[in-house]
Image 1: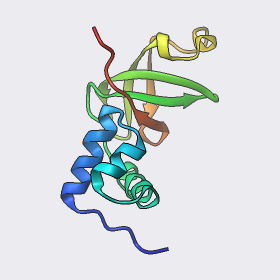
Image 2 (image 1 turned 30 degrees about the vertical axis):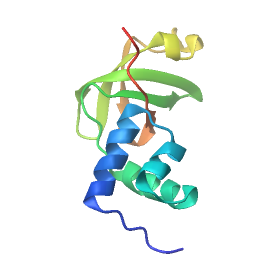
Image 3 (image 1 turned 180 degrees about the vertical axis):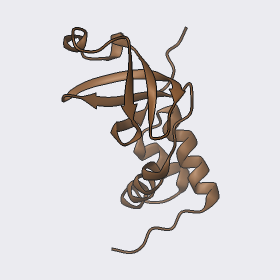
Length: 115
């Protein structure tokens, strides 16, 4: 497999679109590369992306899908305020409304809900 190279401009585009919740196919189109190459570039950037306060993320906890907003960043993790509307309701007895998630456990970013 060839070594992946991502320009600074491409990295910024990928990070921005991941935070917006854009799907991988659309990001590949915006990068003007085929889907497979786009996936490799996205994964390369995703491994190094540091989330920001206010980012809305999805993550797994005990094989349950969870979602929330980052309210505070720590060194390698973040304090999350959960969105129970988008999270597995069976976890309500286990998790508080706020929890800590390691960066490595973040699956992706999603768009902010319409208010």
